[in-house]
Length: 246
Image (cartoon, rainbow, N blue to C red; front, side):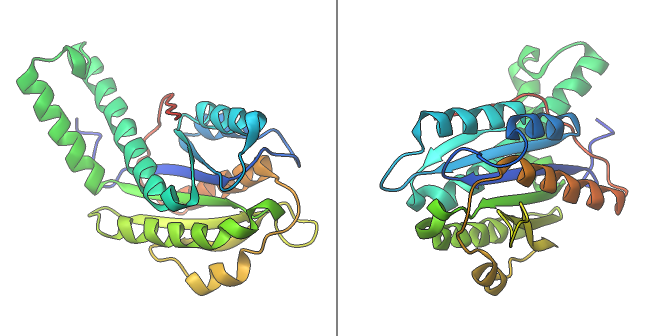
C-alpha cells in the first residue's frame, strides 16, 4: 500500500440545511460533479419544531447519494455530534475503499475476502491512516430565513467540528461558506481554510435571510477545494458511492 501516506488528502463538503433548494442550479447535479472530482458531499438536515417535509428530506438524501456521502436528519441538539461523526465515518469509508482497490490490484481480493487475522491488520492500517491523512472540509451553511433560530447552534457545531479535528495527527483545515450571500449573491465566503474557526466572524456573517441556493453553495465549495488543490502537491483520495440516511 505504498500509495497511501500521511501526505494524502481527503476532501469533503458538509451541507447543513433545513429545507429544499429553491434558487439556482440543481444541487444534486452539483453533488454529482463534486463526486466526479473526488469530493465527498455529506448533508445534515436540521429540524426543530417543524419538519423538512418530504421534498426537503428527499433532496437531502439525493444530494448525499449523488455526492457519495452520508445524510442525517437531526434536531439541533444533535447537530454537533452528528457533524463530527459524519466527517470521521466518511473518512474511514474513503480509506477502506482505497485499501480495497490496492488489495484487488495486488492480491485480487477485497478486505472481506481476507482471513480474519489479515483483515484485522488491514483495519488497523485504515485506523492509522485516518489519523494521519490530510483533511480539507468546506462547511456550507444554509442561512435562509427559516434557519434564524438554528444559526447559533450551527455556529457551535462548526466550532466543535474544528476542535475535534485539531487532535488528529494529519493536517485538518475547515472553510465556511453561507448561502445565500449578501445582496443578490447566492453564496458568501465566511472563512477561508484554517485549522481554527473564527467565532466572531461567524457571529457577524451568519445572518438569516432569503431563499435556499443549495446548488450554488455546493458549486462554490467545489471551487474552494479545487483552488486549494492547485496550491498544494498532496495526493488525493477519491471516494466511491456511499449513502447513510436515517
